[in-house]
Length: 299
Image (tube, rainbow, N blue to C red; front, top):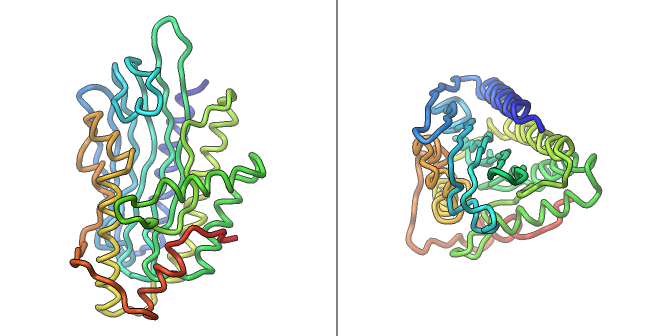
């Protein structure tokens, strides 16, 4: 097991994604802040704001460690309570200006929990998902085709398995609706072969920007008006609700005493909550609900 190799991959992934997003934006660069955690570890946060394309985005690396796993990490695995841990990962969210460019999220991570006299327990997790405001079937199909390409070298059934897991995970329970059109989600990946599991995590990490950048390039110059902007801001409210109420990564970060500014960088800068708003039947806004916020085989 080579933990240092995982860390170096994650740092390089952060570099590559930031470089490509900056190139696609063409207006501004990410700014970086390094931070340390009192209980152990730290990270580097990179944020881009008010670019030509990206209104707000963050691509964060963290590597934290501690004497005891927090409750969010042991909720599904109570046998790990009381173990020391290391957790490292890259997590990102991109909120574009243009309502025709979807929001995207990606995360890849590695955990190891240790206890003296026992074998360490380790696992990988991650994935990426897409949240459009005005959907295009060709974009969603391309996104899922790229997700499938990330999985195929590791097993014919993995795309379907992790696509379904993503649909189930990014479901806003209190709204009874999906957050977006999904992608991939996996967790607790430990098949007994560290190298194979690490290779799968790398494949998912590397395919995120391959899936997202062409969509940005295709839609970033689409004309939009104030009504479309307002709908984008209304739908962003769903993103905030999910991240604060349900997301395990947000809860883990806050429970472990991570840097709050880095954890909450995923939140969009402008959001609307309109009381009991409903789209008009047959409107472009209603198509998001009828044609895209549904569990579907996009391939």
